[in-house]
Amino acid sequence: MRIAIYPGTFDPITNGHLDVITRALSLCDSLIVAIAERREKAPLFAPRERVQLIKNVLMREPRVEVEAFKGLVTDFAKAKKATFLIRGLRAISDFDYELQMALTNRKLAPEIETIFLMPAENYIFISSSLVKEIARLGGDVRELVPPAVEKLLLRRFHKNKAH
Image: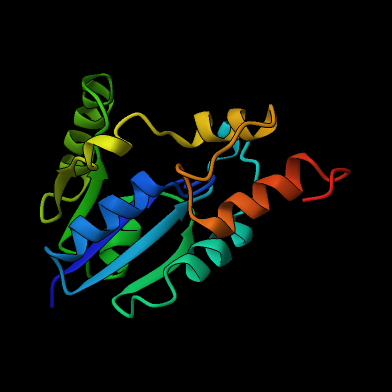
């Protein structure tokens, strides 16, 4: 059984993330979306909120599990008996950081490969940070995130407005 881990903060999950998940599912039997607890990024949503949100969005995909984790992704991957990590690449600017992470992970766990996947062209510019900023400023994020994420962002940023 080929198990893959797709780690990230997913704060919130975007259509670009979902596109990478779809692509990853063609390469593995089971995919674990692993929610990293990264306090230094000052996430908008708590890990449990992100886990529940992603479970709701992906409820019709039985090959996907969603879990939060702390610590090294390589330790989490070993515990889950994963054979590879999935990383999304949006632009060349992502590559330097992602290459550094992949090489570090290879040093820590040489038996676990990193696979880079690019989302479709119409999602290449989307980032969780950009989505949060647009939503915070009252912009339309319908084409950037699943409907459940849009609703949650509207509630979070515009509590006093009727939507």
